[in-house]
Image (cartoon, rainbow, N blue to C red):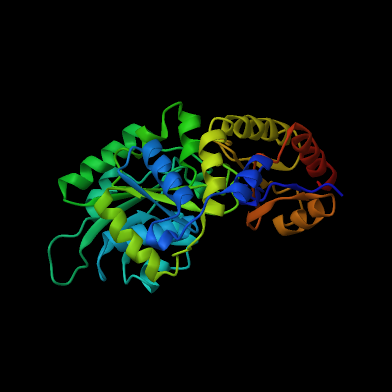
Length: 344
């Protein structure tokens, strides 16, 4: 049976070009800074994001964790959204491993945090309070429907951070999706941030890894933290080689994923019993729910779709997230729409 996997863009497999690059990669010991392929990947990512230096890490979670621990001391506070990936899905690492306190503000439907709410959350100097050190944003914003945060908004947050002497981290796991959707460069989106992570293993199709970018001084500190986290990967150029192919060849084609997400949403909108979230899809994610006429739960629908070779993610008792990616073609979109119609 042909499997159509719409659960996430994390399910992407490396392309043939990536497999060739991995097989032929020149490697060295990266802990000594001697893996030429990793060095090239880090330089390429830093250049594309307008930063001085980059650091190859095993995952976006490791990248965000290393960034926040490099910026903050134990007991410091980071302001982030209550739907942020770092808050919801990274196992509490900033607190468990870094002793960093979080202040969660409500994410608005467009993925932003209200500027006034951020200002109000910044702590006054007081022995009773943690020290506000960092603001963290997410772009695109996963749990807000894959919506892209604008350059203007990110600059507003940076201006506020500078007013209070704070730093700004950007969880840019899908930053290139945001850049394609907004018609701007990833460098423009990342410019206001003191640090930024980008994921190579989602829509860009590499099998492993993210890159954390920032100033040279920041990356030196983040490299030490990566070592503490067990992230010194030695001859990992075989992985970085795929990341280079991803950055050089897979960014512009993300527009195809966005187009197929729109096609998928349009088709599902005609299936009785399905309600699409307002505005979906913003990028490559389609969020939708079951209406009250459907007696099934989301999990039951997931199970019945899987029997037909279609995998989707349930993100609530009656809500789904479907994500398009390189391995979802037009035929797969049509088959998924048909499967939903059969199940419902």
